[in-house]
Image 1 (cartoon, rainbow, N blue to C red):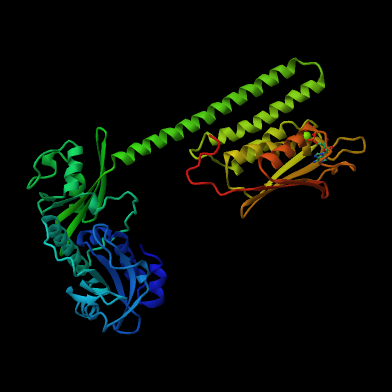
Image 2 (image 1 turned 180 degrees about the vertical axis):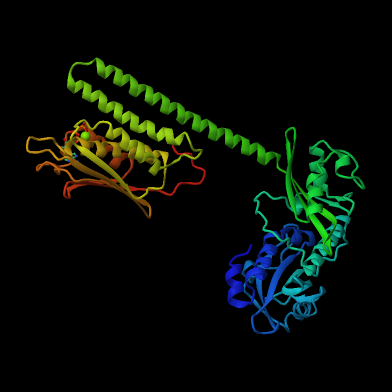
Length: 495
Ligand SMILES: Nc1ncnc2c1ncn2[C@@H]1O[C@H](COP(=O)(O)OP(=O)(O)OP(=O)(O)O)[C@@H](O)[C@H]1O
Ligand SMILES: [Mg+2]
C-alpha cells in the first residue's frame, strides 16, 4: 500500500507531477506483478541532489503467492549505493540487472532483480524484486509461466508502458493472480490456464480442453480480451451464466507499444454476488417496513382527526388533535427511513416537515411566526431520530402555544422560533429558542404538569440518556444535550 507515498516522495526525492503520478499508478496496480514473481517488490527513487548514490524505499508490496522478506517498516529506508550497487546500476544504465544482494536490514542474502521504471525515456525509480535465495526447488510449469509473464511486465516498465496511462479504479474485489490466470498469445489464443482458472471455467460450464483455442471458441466471453488488446489498457468485465458470476480483468501485454498477448485474471464472485443480493433484499425489506409503518401511523392520525371532529367538548378535541400531531411527527421519521437503506436519517430533512406540522396549528391570524433552523445534526440513527423528532415537535408546539399569547394589551404581531442544532464530539446539542413572553414566574420543569414537557422529559432523559435545561433568554430557551455513541458498522438499529 502506498502509505504516504506522496509525502515521502516530496520530502526525499525530485518526483513531482507526472513522474510521481506514474509511480503512484505503478503502486496501485503492481500487486499482480508481485504475485507473478512470488517476490517482494520495492520501489526505490534516488534521494534528491545525490546523483543516484542514495535511494529511498518509497513503496513495497508483498506477494500473496509467496513468502515475504520484509516487515512494513521498510518504507522510508534510505539505501546507500554500496549496499545496493544493482539498484544504482539499473538506474544509470537504464537496463534490468539481476544478482544477489543482502536483505535490507539483515545479513541474509536475497535474490534480486532491479528494473528501471521509465517514463518517456527517463528513469523515475527502480523496482527491486527480492526473494529468498533458499527456494532452490524445481520450478513447475505454473512458476515458469508466471515468472516469464513477470519479465514481460518488467520490460513494459522499462519501455514506459507499465503502469498503464490511466488511473486504476481500485476494486476491492478485483481478481488476483491467485484467483486464476489465463494467458493469451498475440492471436488471442489460450496458451496457459491456471488450475484455479480451470475451476472457474468449469463452474461456467466450460469443460473443453482450452490450449490453443480462442476464448470465444470455448464459449467464454472474448469482448474484454479483445478490447484490452485493441485499447492497450486493462478491461474489467463480469460474466454471468445462470447462478455463476465471474469477474475478469484482461491486462494487455505490450512490446514497443504493440499488444503481444494478454493476461486474464479470473475470479469466481458467485458467493459475493449472492451475498450482495441477500443484503439488497434485506435493505429493501427494511425500507418497505418503514414505509408501511409510516402509512399505518398516518392512518391512525387520520382516524383520530375524524373522531375529533365528532366530539363536542373543545378540550377533548384538542387532546385528539395533539395526539394526531405527535403521531405525525413520528411518521415523518419513518418516511425518511423508508427512503434510505441504512437505518440513519439526515436530521436536516426531518426538521422542515416537523416545522410544517407545527405551523399548521398556529390559529391566531394576526400572529406571524417565523421558524429558523440553524446548524446541522448530520446523520442520526433511527433510534435517536424518532424520539428527537417527537421532542422537537413538542418544544416548537409549546413556543406556538405559550410564547405569544394574544392578550388584550396588544398581542405581538410577530414571533421568532429558532431551532439551533450543533453536533459535537459524541454529542448533539439542540436548542429551541423563542422571543416570546418567557416562562411563567413559578415555572419549574420538575413540577410541570403538562403532558408535552413530561413526554420531552421522559424521552430525553430516559430514552436518549440526555439532559434538558429551560431558562428565560429574552423569551424561552430550551437546551437539550443528547449523547451519541458511534454506530457499530453494519448495525441496523432497532430493526
Ligand atoms: N416556549 C414557552 N414559552 C412560555 N411558556 C412555556 C413555553 N414552553 C412551555 N411553557 C410553559 O410550560 C408549561 C408546560 O408545557 P407542556 O408542554 O408540558 O404542557 P402544555 O403545553 O401546557 O400542554 P400539552 O403540551 O400537553 O398540550 C406550559 O403550560 C407553559 O406554561
Ligand atoms: Mg405543550
